Length: 227
Picture: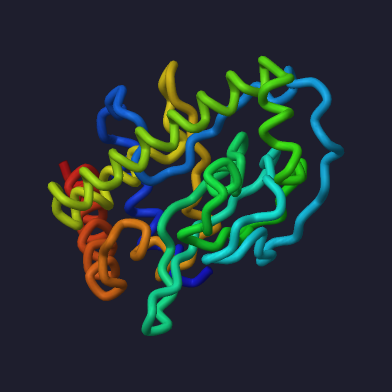
């Protein structure tokens, strides 16, 4: 995409020179929950193309989509018709599980950003499968805890840090290398508007921040060459 040209490469380069992220859970980059290969008796895998809606906002899903590969986004449509990206999810996430277990309408829609491979579990079978499969139950609870911690982290970032700090935090989370957390790098798959919404930054301000970081990186490179 055009916006991910020299500007983003400059940001990526500057991020690589920064210290490694702390042990805090990722707030914006989707956490990868491995271990699906150890869960027995999962439904057959299904290929889902990019841009497909797994379920709609205001709907109680008729099935849970367990993600094996790919990236999905959580979309909220406001009363005035504005579409907002609330978050990203990837490998190991049980899309629709909370709404099904609570028998409640979903606050958001879920749409695939990339082609995905999923296991589709009918809603009426999900609770029983969890009760009968200890490995699946442990995996589901781990993923649920990941999500709670990540959402709290994102809320803390939005409420307590500047837009520039949030961008820096996001860049540090990409391809996170830490014993407790592994993340998917979503940047190559995101539009600039989606990244701005994810970080609660206006698109115009995000562009300014990216240009500022790119200029700072160019200045550092120039100083290094002339030193």
